Length: 301
Image (tube, rainbow, N blue to C red; front, side, top):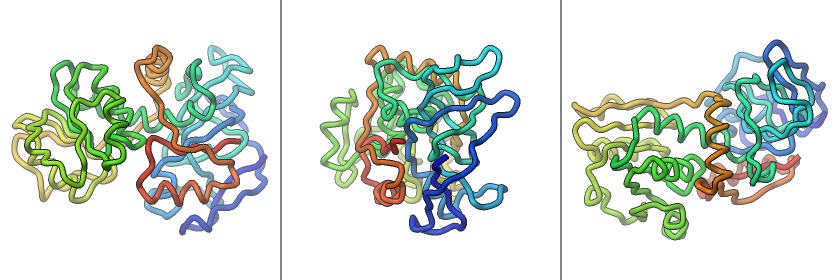
């Protein structure tokens, strides 16, 4: 089968499109023919060595999959069924023609989405979903999402609105109208907005890290919750009375089933900036690392 792998950590030039043996599912796993693979920042961080595994080189790439079941388990999806799901971290294997996933990690592909659109969902949407759950977001919660037009961000603002929260989200000026269309109550230009004037917030979702995390502590009310994604909580900046968690996403087929229902009802929009062929994986990594992607990038197989 065709697969994108890498045999040493480095920039996008280490990616190789090669032929690899097809994987064989073990207990509790299904075999999926991959029609499309989502691209996430964790992909190129893995390639650079920031996210490492204990498996020997060459290593596979990617965690988001949409495709067709080719081998299954009792009680699992039928052979020929269209599914989407997320491979467990830290072992990649989405950028290839066949992959294996735990049956518990997949759900039926949303009917209204193409395979490419479906592949944009799992990792980012599950991250946003698990962040909302960790913070206990509900009707009336005041939520701030940093980088609300990005992969995780555009799902987070929609899930928060679905739960009845009042949502403020930051983005570049060119994406403020996009945030409006997603239902954000207060789109904020990340370069000029006075976020303190929109707060205090009950929950802040930091998808950026660094100074953004440091500033976010001061935007929360006493008893509020800071959820950070790209890096651990910086204890030097911790403020009393604020709860802080780092979310590391986990596969969850049941949550994907519920997310798929929201998508098929029209309550959640999936934004795909572009779809590239598998052989342009290096280009997709370059674009992703520039940090200006609206929604998601996808590789088509």
